[in-house]
Length: 497
Image (cartoon, rainbow, N blue to C red; front, side, top):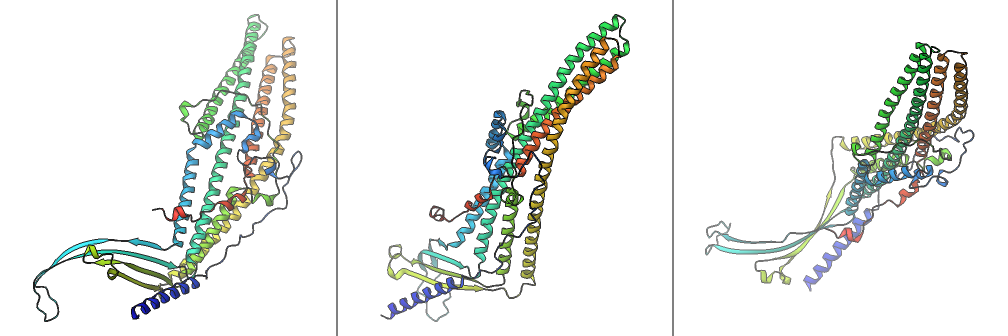
């Protein structure tokens, strides 16, 4: 009866101790996270034909580039998503963050271990015993032990909870970083693609001009041989022809650079990658812009900066938790016997329970310095967040203004090209009629080529700026998707080795 009473008291003691520990664990030190405010303008400076709307209504959330209705671009973007190495690095970093969050979730549970052992030892017959009893001789003894140990650190002041909070926020920041890398890479590919197509258009214009100039040179040579044109006329036409050929050669080199950049973005070796030439014929899509306040929920880089603030805030709580004691509960039980056949008998059972309370009394100011360090880190993330927000507003406004300017420039440049064509037709007619010298024709040819080239450049810039505007608006992404990004403790993971 006495033995049974002691066991009951031991169990009551252990239960009361555990309940006390869990009761203390309800306190969490450190500031609770609250997203700081950022300066937000009331509206964009927008003029026709642009208007404010909600980008998610016009820009697809996943494949934003499909708004350009270019099948070749769609194929290249799909290749990028499948094979880009920078994107694979971002995926690996996200998986690291998920694993780190799982490591912290594991601290919610006690650790259990077992360390079975077996030994056989011979003791000397002349060994010291500390008593006057005479030993009868050497002794050989076996020992069989199967001990189980369990330990659990009680989260007295929320250190573990702050650590898990930081890990979850870091996981969400990593997800936002992945989305931002994806957005940046796909936008870079689209911009390179349309820049290359702009060069294709310029090169085609130069090629046509070269053909026209070659015919013009034949005409001037014939007139020179007939004594109608001077050698100066021939030299002027040859100069324009060769300079046009030179310009086309240099543009081909620039085109190759964009083609190689596209190859790398899509995970291919540049020497083996080639895209056939194609003139630029696409028109920029009608990209509607949201209110500035909506931009905070549309940009993954802003979401990442906001989640980094949450991480830094939780780290302040971790630093403050160092001021408080820690409580470790532990227990041990198992069997120990000199004979393996009696190892699992009731008399062979052993157990022990206990607790350790630890508190740093003097740290030389290290704890205070760590709190100050964490607070300064949080202040830095707040400034970084606000800077990211301001930069986002600047990008959107710059691209809106750029599209407005380029739209007007395209209209006026179309008029300039038409006027340059009329000028060349008049110059040719007057030259054939002997009213002007060939310098007027050469000047008109140069003027037409320059204006056609400028029109091609403006068209390419409009498409690239449209890409940048979609990117600046977040590519249809929505920060609400981050709420579902959490690493929760699952049974299959808990029991996994």
